[in-house]
Image 1 (tube, one colour):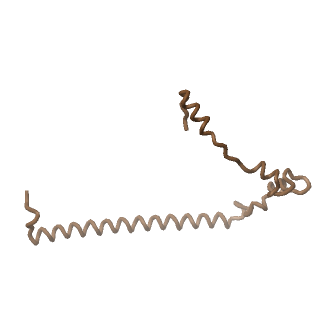
Image 2: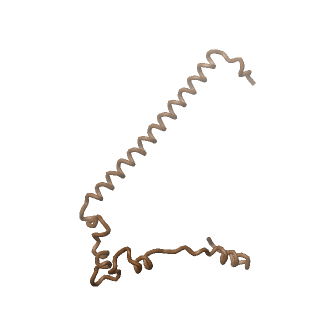
Image 3: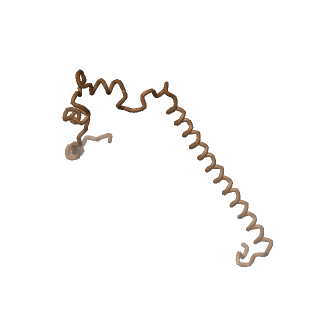
Length: 116
């Protein structure tokens, strides 16, 4: 085996050339990856803006302009006629968290295997 503490000028230049080549190759691959990602983001932005500009595809731009929502909150015939901030809408449209960890622990202690 060669002693690496003693290397000639030619060996050092070969090593430097190989290292430089791999560095340039790595930089080119990174540059291409960044360019591909930027190209994807640009195409995605153009698609989103084109879909948003298409009035036939998305005719209703705001949820409060949706005819079904207007029927739901209609003052005369609507199911939630008191409005979106009423007690009834809050009761029906909001969820609540219930801690069920004790019940799960009891089932596991009985030997029930849960697929969670």
